Length: 212
Image (cartoon, rainbow, N blue to C red; front, side, top):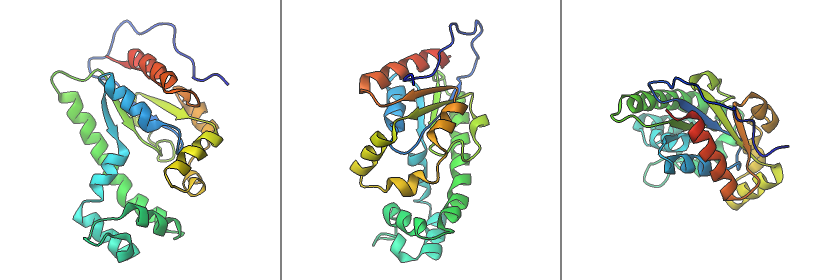
């Protein structure tokens, strides 16, 4: 397999007035966060779904819903959501993940749309918008972006990266579409098994390809 998908031989003659919006996705341990940071360094406006979720879990309405569904064990001593404990409780509960998805995903979607609208009204406008969305295909969000980029890696490497973070690879990856299916649907993809310089090169090419 080549390390990344094909690049068109030429750009459109007429660039869009507003910045394109890219969805960045991939399996756990693939390197999405590193790719997102590389886009930010090149001048793209970037949004991490994990940062959005962190803010959502600080909402008193969400905290109360978590407490009522999972009990005080999912909260810290000072009443905030303990995402590690919540994850353990949710994965141990057959309906726990579905409950969290119904609670959080609509809020994440609304926050992302508001962010995109705000970025497109900025002066000067950013050259590119990149949103990192781990479950982009699973949530049916491909059409929300002008193009979808997939960052993937071999399972051995992804397992090692996830283990280094102290997370459970099998529990989390089991909810995700296979890497092969993501690649098949992607506009562009990177097999992120190499060095950071390979990822930086790929991001640089994608930035120039899609920027306004």
